[in-house]
Image (tube, rainbow, N blue to C red; front, side, top):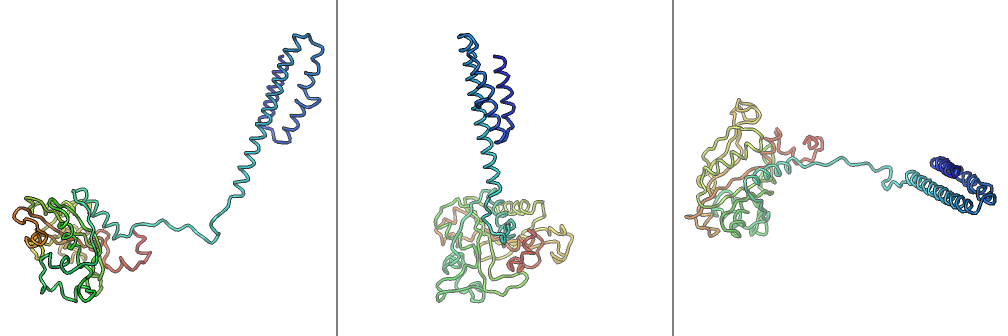
Length: 339
């Protein structure tokens, strides 16, 4: 009995790391006609009936164990062989002349829109969208811009279809759409593309992006506007620049103001970018004109609101130190890869 146990132990060790040829030899060595276990079974005639049963049972059990281990090892060898074959015969679905493309990135203007939107979302603003093809009513008249206003001149506006429609000149038109559909309180920003019929140069383009902002509710004041825009500038540029508000004029706000921020490049000391003034004009804003509320059927005695407009390209240029707006749209990868 001890011999049979030792035979199984030795066979198991040999089978564990055997290749196919060795497995065949081991099968013959232990299970063949002249194999070790076969010889034990043939020698049973010399034992008593009781010993025959016990030794025979143990030998047959050992035979089954060794057969099973040999088959398991063969299966393992087949799997190893198949895995190796799969690795060696892996198909390359891309011809050799293909090459991996570099990872893309957001255009600096898109990145600026995302950054500005993130700040205003954190301040409770929702994002609204509106049509780029507008009517005279939404783009001008509802915004308190009368028919004879210079902004409606052909030199500023792209009119189409016999002047019935136009490409919007600002995203302010969307505030009319929003207020027509929603009663106060309203608090939205409107990022989008706008069009002006003007020549392109280092600081102007016929197509550019704006972000309009609008907040309407009871008891909204100019203080709320100042706090909001000051907080936006501090958060977007990442540090507390000084901010100032200068009186200005926009047809759809009263009072109106221009917002200047301390030059982020020289911190107010004066440099080429701020023309040695220490300040940079950043955006326009003001309290919504009562006539705009009349156009959308808001109670202008009950509600007040503020609006602001941000030139995205201008903010982008300030954020990244770009001195020519045309660089943003020439699609020069040497330039764009810097962002």
